[in-house]
Length: 138
Ligand code: 5GP
Image 1 (tube, rainbow, N blue to C red):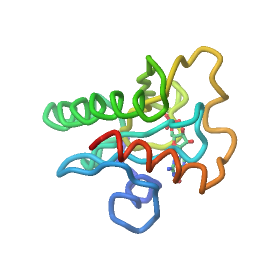
Image 2 (image 1 turned 90 degrees about the horizontal axis):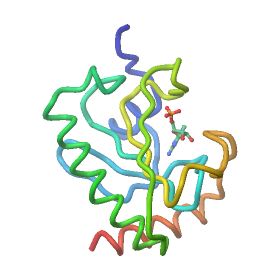
Image 3 (image 1 turned 60 degrees about the horizontal axis):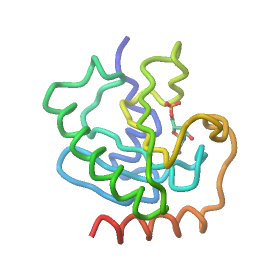
Image 4 (image 1 turned 45 degrees about the vertical axis):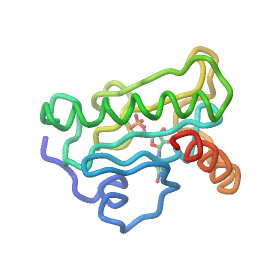
């Protein structure tokens, strides 16, 4: 299937739609999930136009994992938890709702977490978590 340039994450990459950003480099962006499954739920996206992991170049995948590693550590520190879940859904059949490659970094365990992409979180609360994550990133 061809890549949909109008998906919400493509718009965030182009600066056409806002996000609460915690990190950006040449190849990736990390920002707060607006319908978090746990406090501090952060998304890492590739800037490359790819829908699923197999669509992503090896270099893009390496860049994403490098950022995911940083975010896992920062989220653990920021949220005061000893563990974090990394989740990546491939295709609508797996429950992927935004057709642009991304990794979820969810503080703590996914088991017993809030439902996926269900309830909008208060923006100020998300900004507060983002500040803590930015501080933890150093
Ligand atoms: P997926 O279902 O594709 O694996 O995950 C997409 C994630 O993006 C969901 O967790 C959902 O809450 C989040 N999301 C959907 N729309 C937006 C948005 O406009 N901004 C942000 N920051 N997150 C979004």
